[in-house]
Image (cartoon, protein in one colour):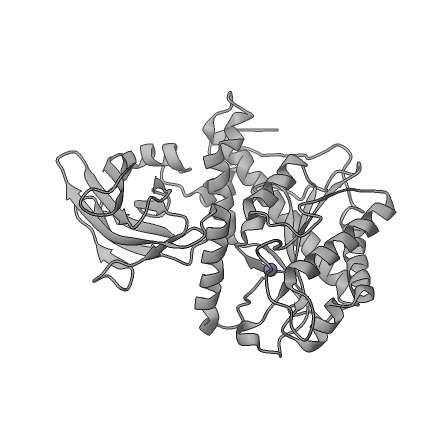
Length: 420
Ligand SMILES: [Zn+2]
């Protein structure tokens, strides 16, 4: 990754990187701008009009989990509303205060609602006298209706409370039979990642060289099926990398990167392992729901049951990702200094699948002369990737031939779903 946050002062840089990731994943070459937000109050509904310089994709959904809100995801959007430089403003009708969050993985506008409401209709309009317009009509709706259509809330319980009462999830070992390992060398093609320093090659080239080395080591061990997201210098969208893992029904996903300290500082060095953050997990949950991946396989299941299974899958993924991450840190600590000794969390897009345990391994800092020299040395990469292969061996040392076991028990509240 290009940026690493080492203090609060660097948060804007991190935000930049997050926005860039979102743009890359959405296929937007440049950020486009929101130039106006307007409101129309009608008897039955409130109309929100978001004006943009060019036509933009969007996704609007109401949420009642914490308090009534409307969220409008607009991939690639920037903020250029004159008079509202802080990205905040006051709405009318059902729309209360609103704010633009550019730092979210997908830039989004969030409206606090004055009462529980749902999206009645949303559509795009070509330019009239102004720019392109995103139009969203919201109307009052009981909280139960809002949560039934968009999320998960039963009788005022938050999702977390509901699950805490009803679901028990235990660690489920991976399957033993020829595990499928997906190796994702970061960047590539027109995206070189962090530039080469101290005479070395770019991050994308280092990641590819390391990925190919890891592939060969794993293949030589004869135990795994190894799939590469890329095995040459090509550009891949972030979402395509997830799709490779999903199509392969991967048991584990490892994305390889090299870090670069802000402003080229040479001090920070060492390897780090990232797993999906809580906010990333929320996005993974939303993606899974919006993809309908849980509904397609189970038209006969109720939405509640689907949501429970999704929660269990997310929890399993989290547990297994953390175990794998700890295993990598342990194995690689004999080869490289560690930037952090614990797994770190962030909402990296490539980690967003809802099911496959996934880590992002920052092999070292390209901005540090020692790390750079090491990473540009084939024998060193071989040692480091051998350590990663060892960590994969130890991750799969405990496995479960009967496949995933999911259990959920009805809790003290009668009427909850019981699954086996
Ligand atoms: Zn990177």
